[in-house]
Length: 249
Length: 323
Ligand SMILES: Cc1cc2nc3c(=O)[nH]c(=O)nc-3n(C[C@H](O)[C@H](O)[C@H](O)COP(=O)(O)OP(=O)(O)OC[C@H]3O[C@@H](n4cnc5c(N)ncnc54)[C@H](O)[C@@H]3O)c2cc1C
Image (tube, rainbow over all chains, first blue to last red; front, side, top):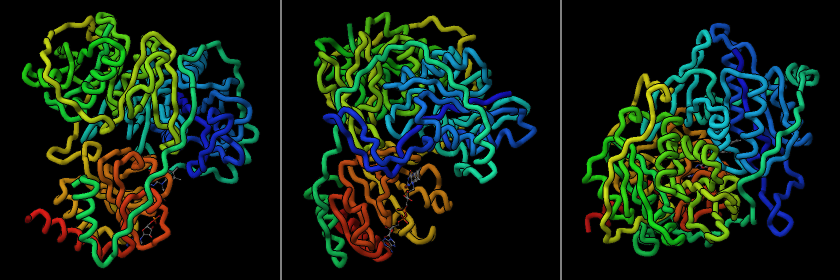
């Protein structure tokens, strides 16, 4: 049984976001690139399952759609413990293209469980996982906060408004994972980093997929009004401001 | 032509989010010279369905098939796509919540319809069709043009005020061509907390961070929340430490909320925390460090010790309420 973890290459979450070319391009000067946080958790869970012989999980592959410049991030995933990697040599502009490329990969090389993070911290689309499932005509489960596999049989916990549901779907399926799927992201050890150097990154050429959307421009957030400070000796004044000025209580 | 808006129900009832969605769809319909049709899936009474009309839906379609009792992303996608095609819908609106996120992207592929996910505003223009959406976890917004004939929008919760209008809506019970074999999701167990205000539904949120010092200090924070009719939340380290339940974790990797008022107590204001709360209309910060970044995001602040200030705020709210 094999798991595929789809990973996105995103700016470190503390990056000061700036744009160039009249606010149409993200300014990547000096930016540190990392595995998207949820994808990292997905990878962690996949590896935990593989570590447990009773799960029946035999291999963990990562897939990424992006140019050669994102290989350091793929190497990081290999150092954390993925067995091998597939990179589709294509620079996507939107989720639809990413999902379409990943679907091609999976049609050529089947996996039993496909994991995607709930969103990427750059586009915040929350769309790739479910789009991929639809391209594959496979079941998908969203908001997954728990995944267990025993003898190849998966039990999934998903979040619903105000609670949780335990569900199962036939394989192959796509699970779109979020908080809870793993506790802490696994960190690459020295040995892993050494081994990653010799692990394979298979590069596949893209299929042609036209985008459905077009970015017009980015807009920085509007600066908030300056903070009004209330004297710590008189917190009551805060309640008065919230009631009479902001009118929110 | 029409704008189709899908709204889920909670044990047969709609909530504010449903009315936000329908009001939003009605406005988008007006902008595009058409009308809004609401779609409900599940056992909802006619009296409840009628409420959608009060927010501007001209037609209400109700699917009550037992096959759609639980959320199965493929069956729901098939059902909504079928209705959208029958209605000739050119724009489909869903919520940007767990349910919407599991269906909208599938619909996008099925109908080859561009998606503007997580929008918090009306389209900036309708010809070309440009939507406004959050990117970089709230550190920027994008103007995104949707280039397909059919378009899908998912709306952030609490970003559009419901508008009641005098309106007569028709209700139609429909069937769709779904068979049992299509439903792949088996629900084995459901655990629901009942009677608790959901964090994502709350208009006021009182949230505590590591500056609360210990899990034993939450009493006055919870009391303040109760008095304000607020939900409680926390920063990630607080839930990681087990001081508070995981459902309360807000931020980039937790819940994303947009209440009218977010009160951050002993929270430093890391970018990852702000990513989940920056869409709040007002942020109040209580922090002992006057240089804490949270004050840059806040409109009101108190520099001081949370342990001293919270009980005084509780008393102040009690006084105001007594009046
Ligand atoms: C990939 C990634 C994702 C992350 N996702 C999230 C997320 O979703 N949500 C999240 O919250 N964090 C997230 N984090 C962690 C984040 O970077 C911060 O570490 C975290 O938000 C800090 O929590 P805090 O503000 O409670 O604690 P601290 O940063 O320790 O701040 C405590 C604050 O309390 C104040 N304080 C101390 N004593 C008192 C007192 N007596 N009275 C009043 N104030 C006091 C201090 O001045 C300080 O500002 C993420 C980090 C990474 C790397």
